[in-house]
Image (cartoon, rainbow, N blue to C red; front, side, top):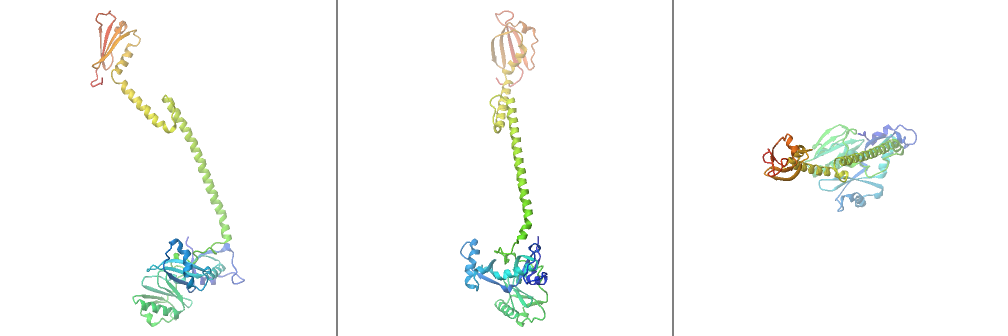
Length: 379
């Protein structure tokens, strides 16, 4: 939100309350605003940076400037604006009494000042150029990004002339009424017009806020009370959101527990052995699958595959196995009581089967040879 801007002197004409000079309007009716204030009440001081860390500068600056001031440092506000090209710190100094008076004038006009700036900073700035404006019989002079002053015309022209003598390359822009005489020694350097300072649309130098480091007058009790309902609503929303997330987390934990139980129960239905923890189920499943694949490969290799095929062929034949040999991809079996087997159709896909009479045995003593037709089968 961009706050409106005006000069403190323009607020005097907006006073609407009756009674004593500084009688205040209700705090609830105050309008926030940024204000320009008289620069003649503000002093700029230049000091070398303290040797202490930067975080300590704000505390040290008042004591460094104590000997230059006519007031106790407790009654003065200090604002660090920055550093000039020579590395010196630029300090704005203003009396607390002046600030309090400006705050009273603003409040009497229905305004709550959020920031205050020296009014010479409302003039345009251009490097190598001095800008001069006019405000109710006072010359406003801006000589740098944050440097400048305000003074009566006779003092201001004298100071400007000194600056021009020190640097003849400087140019001057003057926006001033025709009734004010500009000295001849300045006219030759100057571009002169009769424009007025536009307080509402001048750029605010935020680093030079005179209300910085102050907690006075920034908030009113009624203003704070207006925010209490919104604050309560905000806190309630946060608490409800936290409760919602906590409930969601608990529900998620319950669902995770149910899924973990289902996972371990499913493992037990598929595999034997001790039930693993949920975090180890995947590892155990992979390990069991690897074992099953190895077993499958073993079952499909010779001579196990041949024996399994023969098992189906010889089931229920009443045969008696007396000897078994495996050699050169062939299974040789010596069988007693093979009468029933000889009656069956001995045909196994992928194998050649040969049945012969055992030498020196009875007619039911047979020799069965089973040879795989697959090439390259491991022995």
